[in-house]
Image 1 (cartoon, rainbow, N blue to C red):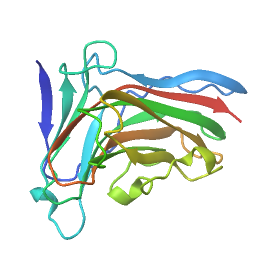
Image 2: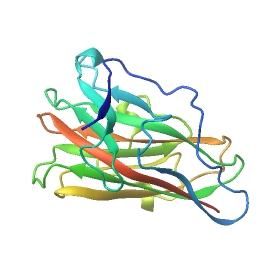
Image 3: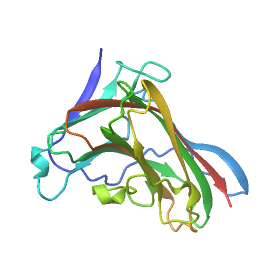
Image 4: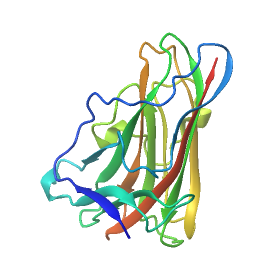
Amino acid sequence: MTIKTMLRRDLLRAGAMAGAATIAGCTGGSTGPAFEEGFEDGLGDWESGAAIGPEVELSEFEWEFGVSEEEAASGDRSLRIWNEGDYDDGVTWGVHPVSVEAGQAYQITASAQFWSESESFNTLRDAVMRLGPEPPEVEEDFPQPGVNTTDLGETPYGGLREPLWLADGWREYTFEWTTPELSTGTLYIALGTSVIWEGDATHYIDDITVEVETQ
């Protein structure tokens, strides 16, 4: 097993990140995937981040983020996220830029495969996903528990927060985002896990896609 792991004890804010994926076209209709990721070539331009409630110092919240060969939905590698559960709180995520054309409104569909060790009646972790004009900085930048923006119409950002441990192994999570007219040419896709239940847990993420259609 080869694990390229980055340990972080301070919140990493995603700054200016180069190497965005293919720019979405300026004509109407589907442009195909604007972004795809399977981590076969490592982390590339992915950045990591974490946050926890104000009653706990972030430096006390332990987590890991890196590429692993332990599990893969396809290919040989996936993104591995581990975080502790001692505080029944905390979120760990990765973020990557996605290029689009400014001055357009889009209908966007984002999906990813998340791996859980087994099925559980207890909600041990939530999957969190977010796509918006800014990268997340705190847990509140992700949707609230149970929210998926698919049916909400136009919103400032898209995303979901839904339970993990619903299946033994891989399960797809997806959301749609109806954007306003965008003034930026760079969006940020963020994915990770949010601690719900006390106990350490490892999850894997793979086969991330962002599909863009002009309105």
